[in-house]
Image (cartoon, rainbow, N blue to C red):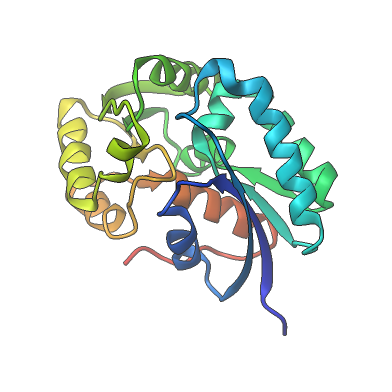
Length: 229
């Protein structure tokens, strides 16, 4: 049996998404990656150009005939809006011929899988992008119990955030209010060694952008995600 072929669209600077995505799949995957180059961190005004970049990425992935495609940039999805995120997936599916999931859309589905009505959120983003994320979550039917952000202003600051910092800030956010689940947004934040302990220590389901995207992609092709450590 050949390996599952997964297409991935992701920011070129991202160092976390590829290795952690492989960890969540229950079997080895053949991963083809289309990297999106940007001069700055993503902003609302960048979205028209971002859609063109995503379509170009889909054309690049087509030659590998993926079984499933992941739109791996969480911010691109929720900055596009509740309907715009679905349009990103439609664009990629049209270009690649493969069913497509997004990190942002998977976030809502995963929280629904946990029967979450209220959520604690940790993000690395600045205030403008965080506002768009709040709106996206509310449109998805969620109440935000606590919202904590690193509020980075550069790619260098984002890349410097390690697992220990994610764990500390996630615990701080979780202590602010009770919620049904915890979500760590952004596919650059490292969480593979964080989510299991965080869930046990807070007695709440803990998700990340990467775990949610992997879970949704697995669901799409009839697989079950690998269990937390």
